[in-house]
Image (tube, rainbow, N blue to C red; front, side):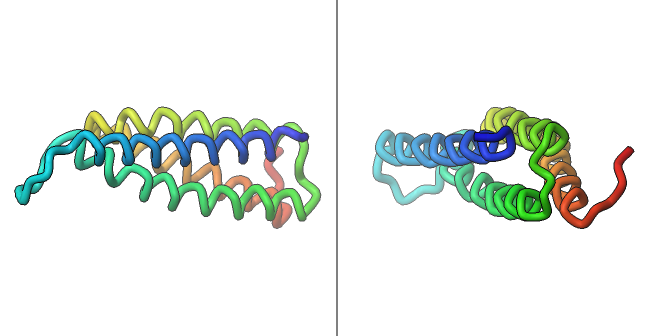
Length: 124
């Protein structure tokens, strides 16, 4: 299994862990009609953000692979994406707005770079 697909699998694991966190938070919450603020409400919405990022990443990885770019550079970009998404989750839960914005922009830029490999943009 090459590096980009390993990173794709790791990104899927991050997606599933965020979904488990949402399930755990919903089980711990006391039934109430008031809206909860804080990390619990952000934990419930974290899987939505991870799903959106995962969809773009999966498309970028598959496009780069189908274009024949599944080497070292694509693997480095893929694992950098996974590292950015892993650090995004705690920043999202702790409401570190600037850090999570920077990490989301980094994730998006890495997806664009993978798409750039697919269309043959020279990166040397």
